[in-house]
Length: 115
Length: 115
DNA sequence: TTGTTAATTAACCTTTTGGTGTAATATACG
DNA sequence: CGTATATTACACCAAAAGGTTAATTAACAA
Image (cartoon, rainbow over all chains, first blue to last red):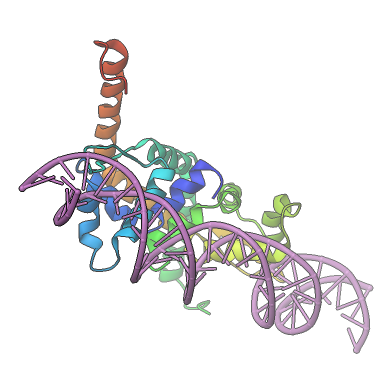
């Protein structure tokens, strides 16, 4: 995944990683802290890999404190992702309105169409 | 990719597909219209596949008009993606602030710490 | 030194992704 | 009918994603 924005979205495209980010939004946490909720579903190396993905996307940064790696959130790429969406939001909302109107017309109207 | 939110983010994690969405945010377009900017880089079936990904994520819907498949944007999943981000935005911004404060302190301050 | 805890690396496997080329389908047009 | 156009389906392939186990590194503690 070449460009930063793609890396960000790709990193977000996984529930485990999103949960990790959610956890980190409550504050710094070590790898094992972050791993804990998932150790029923996967092993530690798998967790490490997920964190690597987040790190490569610039979404987290890892520090060092003795043998621990305290991770913390870096919101900046997220802001860029939101920015991309916002850039198109107006058009999307217009589409939503159109859809709304469409559904409204359909619901109200003469029953035909559903393939 | 199981859950809808992951599908949405995954669909967004590709510049081609994002460009297609951008194009669609300007209005309905046929497959070949959408394909046109990318035909130097890939074949039509590849484009079709990208559109399939967008469709499976619910980001677009395809109509039928003779042999054409007019595509149009569906902003709803995008809204859900933004929602997820907004849910954590406050925390992220706090992190950003913390980073800001950290950098500020570092730049301004008493010369120590430089690792 | 020996051991323990935290985390990563390496080698490997399976599934998904993103592409290809070559048909196949569907619809309009003479 | 036969042909052109728009789009998709199929079979295949290489690379990336996501997981595993086993071994390794790093820091502390006895």
